Amino acid sequence: AALLKSDNRLEQGGVLMPPYPELLIKAAETDRFRDVLLSCYVSRMDETIPNQFAAVIFSLSTREHYVAFRGTDDNLAGWKEDFLMSFKDAVLAQKQAAAYLSKYAAKLPGRIYVGGHSKGGNLAVFAASHTTDRLRSKIAAICNNDGPGFQTALLKSDGYSKIESRIRTVIPKSSVIGLLLEHGEDYKIVASTENGILSHNPLTWGVIGASFVHEKELSKSSRKINEALRAWLSGLTLPEREQFTEALFDVIRASGAQTLSDLTKERLVIIDAMIKKYLSLDRETRRLLRDTVINFFSIRQKVLHASIGESIGTLLGKQTS
Image (cartoon, rainbow, N blue to C red; front, side, top):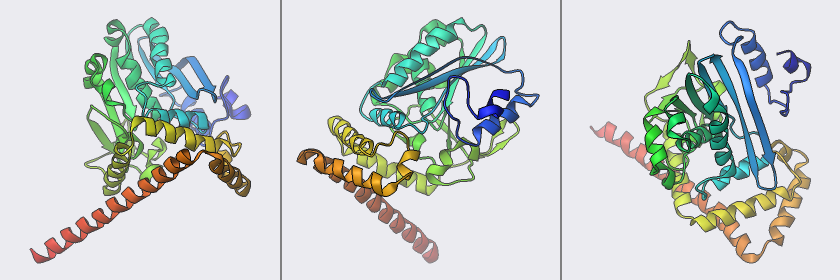
C-alpha cells in the first residue's frame, strides 16, 4: 500500500490504470485482505512477437492459494496476441500460463484455485488443462471471469475434459468478450451497471457480500452481437484471419502508437500515418482488410434488422392474441 501511495506503481510493473491503485490500497487496509500474501509475480511484454503475460499468487492461508492471471492491458502487443487466438490453437501467453502454473503452483501445499479476468480467464483454463494430473488434482476450481473461448481442438482435448466440471465461468448480462470463440462449460450471468463492451469491466458487476448478483439471461443486444461476430468469423478462413490481423496491426503500428491510449492523441497525425500505411499495402491485402471490415458491419446490420423484425412480430402477435 505504501508503494502504491508513493507513485501508483507496482514493483516490476507498469503504471496502474485508475481506480486500481486506490482499490488495492483499500483492500490492503481491510480485515478480510490485509493478511493475504502475494508472491511469484511475473510480468512479460514483447511487442515483436507479440506477447503480454502477467501472473501472481494470492495466498489466503498456508493451505489455500489463488493463482491469478492478468487480462489484456492497454498495450497493443497484448491486443494483437488476443487476435491471434482467433486462428491459433495456442499463443505464447497461454504456453507461459501453463509453464507458470507447473513451476510455481506445484510447490504450494493445500488447495489451489486458478483464475483471471478476460484474457486472464482464458489463460487459467488453458493452464489447468495443460498441467499434470498430480497438480490438476489439487485444483479446486478454475475461475473464468468473462474470458474468451478457444479453438475447438482444445475443447476436445483430454486435459480439458478433466477440468471442465471445475470451471466456474461468469459473464455479465451484456457480455461480448466472454462469448467469443468456443466454450464447452456452462456459465452464470452476473448483473452489471453498464451495457455492451463497458460491462466487461468487473468493477461494474453486482456483488452482495461474497456473492455476485445473478441475472437469469443475457441481454438481447449481447445475443445479437455474439451472433454477428460468429457469422463474421465463420466467413473467414484461418489464413484470412491471420492475414487480416497482420494487416490491421501493421496499419495501427504505422501511427507510432504502442497503446490504445496513444491512438487518442494527435488524432489527425495518427490517421494520416495510418492512411499512408494502408495505401502502401499490396492490392490483395488492402482488399482483404477493406472487405473484412465492411463485411462485419454488413452482417451486424442484417442481424440488427432481423432483431427489429422479430421485435415487431412479437409485438403484433401480442396485440392480436
